[in-house]
Length: 79
Image 1 (tube, rainbow, N blue to C red):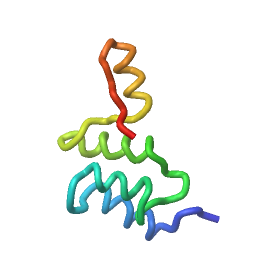
Image 2: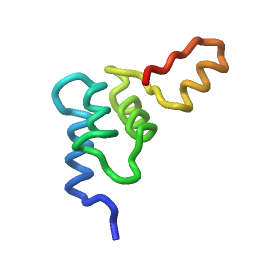
Image 3: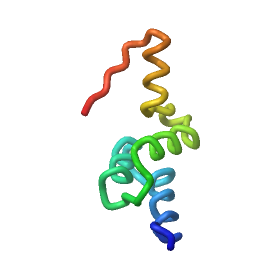
């Protein structure tokens, strides 16, 4: 049995990639809000958005932050 319906997946991805408003707000709505899906967490959301919409915001998730720190950049995470 699928954990997320096809309609829910389409609705969420459409909102994330093409919805109105600020990109960071849309990502928060997918991670924590009304567009949240099972087994699709913060890293998946940020990586997908950054990969497909790199013209708007670069990929920024836990792995990229660790890589930037390794390269000597001071990465600050706001909670």
